[in-house]
Image 1 (cartoon, rainbow, N blue to C red):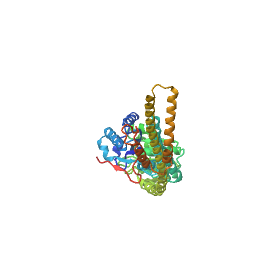
Image 2 (tube, rainbow, N blue to C red):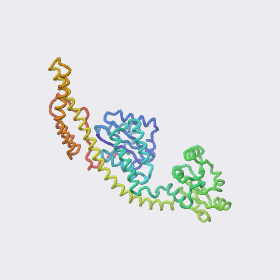
Image 3 (spheres, helix red, strand yellow):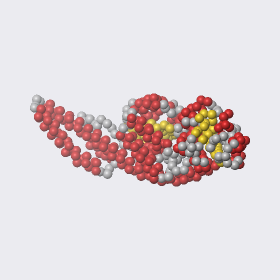
Image 4 (cartoon, one colour):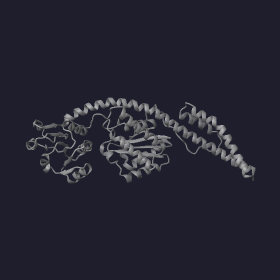
Length: 440
């Protein structure tokens, strides 16, 4: 039995490449079914986020399964995808899974969304019967490892993305709870700000945008009140916090606009400008009752948090390697059980054939005679195999060594004896790194 991971992520591919691999539910099911229709693929889990597209497959015949999965993916997404693919096998695939769920492989180390995304992918696959024992075992263990990393290290402490730092920083200077928030812009940075806001229980969210369709969609997603730029000055009058994150090349919020706002009120105004180039005239920071912060202020905080997270990441790596060692033993046990099951099928087939042959030689006999012969053969087979199987189970030998012994046992040069119907191949030596970047 093998486990393989094939992926295209932000580490190897531009964002446009990953974006075109995003699947709607109907197409996702078709891809699952196309993969599972292959002879050497019996289990599949697909993970897709804004920064990665990954499939995990399990089955018998590793090299054949990889070739089949790779061909389907290239037929599906185009031959150009090949140069961005990475492939991991056996424990390298499991190691990547554990690191991904622990957010060590994320664009932002320590981010929390990936744990839920992987859990959703596992549940989806199990709900449709796309994954069974092997991938279920691997993914459930990965989720357990991910939770352990988060509870025993501080890897998620201290925000590092500019948008999340912006929200935390604003909350530090002017608690967001029950406040009116304005977001200027409807792009990715603005969306990330909007995602972080609900946990702070703000009172009202106003969103300023230029394009009506994008503005409405943004507000529908994040429960905002859509406003145009012409309405910005009016909305500033009772705003508490402003986040500006457009791609406009010109200053949108001038010192004059803010002075006009401040003159008509007494409460403090916090302005966070995370746009590049700046949306807000920096001189607004000289106005009393205004807290102004630009992207450079936030980068300094982000970098400090990032360094702290990297130190925690080293602790997480140690946890993962310990868990990998334990999981290797579990995989070995599952593999050995499968080998012994196949051996049992093999010996049972021989027994049945010999019983049938004996009954034909006896001719017409009482039903009791067949029962006796059948029981006798079962007893002989059980006693013959018992010590051998006990020795295999208690032996410290690897699954590969046990597989070799079983193959010697079944390969008796008797052409009349069938081999076990299911060939089970063991994964590669875990001491050897098996990441391959496909270039063809």
